[in-house]
Image (cartoon, rainbow over all chains, first blue to last red; front, side):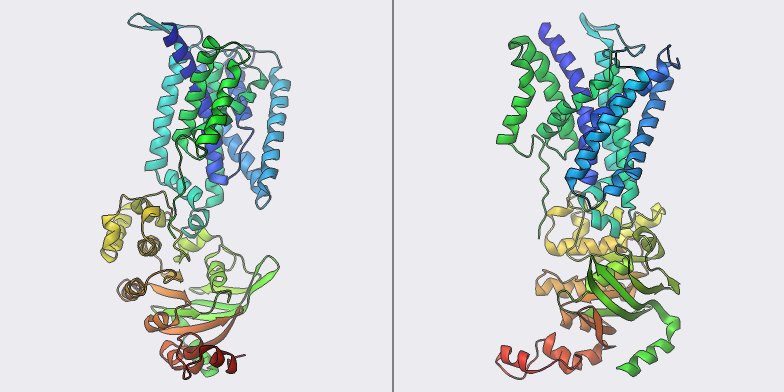
Length: 291
Length: 268
């Protein structure tokens, strides 16, 4: 029973990591830049939802504020690309990296000013309730997180493989020049990828917030998500989710079986091992090109 | 040669593409230095030239991937110099890039569908895909295969087929013979010829392989160091001494090197 509880809570955490990692990979594939503010995008998404929902702020119904938060974060991602990242075209990658790290600081500060630095809880109808499946009692929040992640993954899969714009996003990331030749508006497509990453981050943030209280520094879990993305194979969307779930599962088991102090290191130990023995990650998507 | 050009300008009504005094830079390097040429409706025009002559830059500037510094590009009477590439594609010019440049992880079918990205007439797109498959049956066989796993010749076919999916009036083909075996080159060029005749696609070809290119073409230009140095009917160019010497490898003496250096190209 204990094992199962650990498994489910790890899975739920892993889903959040996986979704943040998905954001990393989306942007990396489209623009070959790493958005180190992805974790802070998640934080901002969570706080926007909280600001809309909680009674002390706007007090809207939870199910109304969720789509608003997702759309706002999508627009935010689009705007960031259009106004800032696009201007960095031709600059070295490190410039974009530093820029996104700085952006993360700004967002953290901004959220602190608006919502305060103390932990607050999202007043969602999901928190603190249980569901039972034939004698097995699980937290509703955890089930909600896992189900939402599965639904979102399936939706994204269909989006990227069945829709014209989704395939165009893949095309632009595989061969940007050829995408230009085919008349795909690459710059707009890239902005839309940032929008998608923002929206996915918002979902991740809302899921995270429905499992416990949040404060402006939760964005730092982006570091774990980054590790998850690398473990999964940076550049692979399914890999990001798999990596996230692996990291999520390692944590509770490590802290249960291994002495504190060592357990927190485990995800990074795995990262280390993966980098040594399987540098392309678990779901490697090696770019094959015949000449 | 000069008279030839004048005669062509009289028939401007048939001209699909007219490039006038075009100049383009790669950073500080001037890659094309005042190029003027014309492509007429229904014809295949070839631009010959060695590596670094500026052929690819010329095509990139026409398709809008690069912006010109100076000059005009008239397409159906409208100056399209500096237009965004997606606008150029929408107007009916498609650029089939050098070295295939397929989307390696997408399937053949998805690649083709991306060729039709600017179009929204789904039924017609479907029909055009069947048309492409009728020209390149191997692509129909491989339609669910990732494009990156195709052979070089198949990728070139896919690149041309993908270009056709935009239903272009003018197709810019950049070195379709690059890296292909002689027999495949023959096959590709005969298909290019058929597409030109049967689908009425006007072609502008850029090639180093002068022999095959001139054989299928109606009109030819020779480019060197960013300038057009020679122009004429393809048949006439084939007979030109300079072309034979420098592009077709025809020579009277056996010692290659000597002959090359002794004779000066007359256009310089």
